[in-house]
Length: 227
Ligand code: SF4
Image 1: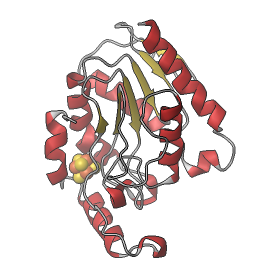
Image 2 (image 1 turned 30 degrees about the vertical axis):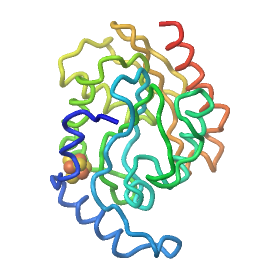
Image 3 (image 1 turned 180 degrees about the horizontal axis):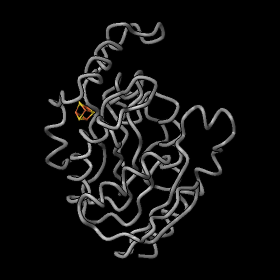
Image 4 (image 1 turned 90 degrees about the vertical axis):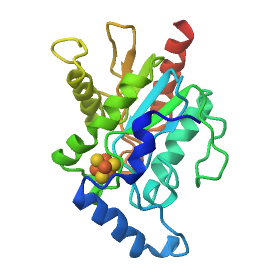
């Protein structure tokens, strides 16, 4: 699958010292259940089709998920939820995402993140968002067919609009508020649908249910169908 130019270079990126240290440390001091794994321990590139009409934006790879398997949202519970939902609405060829050789293929869909290296406590610093922003800028410029954007969580939502501002793209003022299911249609007809992140904090507490996540991708599918 062809990738935007910046995504080809991203694998060599070591701009964020703290994250480079952490992603490599996690690979050395493994958790018991993954002790036989050789961790990826590098930036995790985006995944998907260059002509995709749906873009999903996550926060950052999980230390023992994407940072272990080398594929975005792969090998952790958040990914289980995400790809099941994408599969139900025809955006993925299978509902599971276990490792990078499991045959997963996205269909008309592209999954990226605001930050491409695993951060301690899942919390990137403002400087790390800034360092990683050029990759998102590059994707927004190169993926010309996007009709629906689903930022997962408020931080991804802000990163998306922050990147658009940096590109000088015109957005509604004031910017729309983030909320699960809150949708905005931008000037060019792109629909942005906020979604809670399928993190364990959200899924285990019932803040986000599978039905709620399905509603997001059902609307994405309907909008794409109607375009
Ligand atoms: S988070 Fe982004 S900018 Fe920072 S080291 Fe990783 S790929 Fe590079």
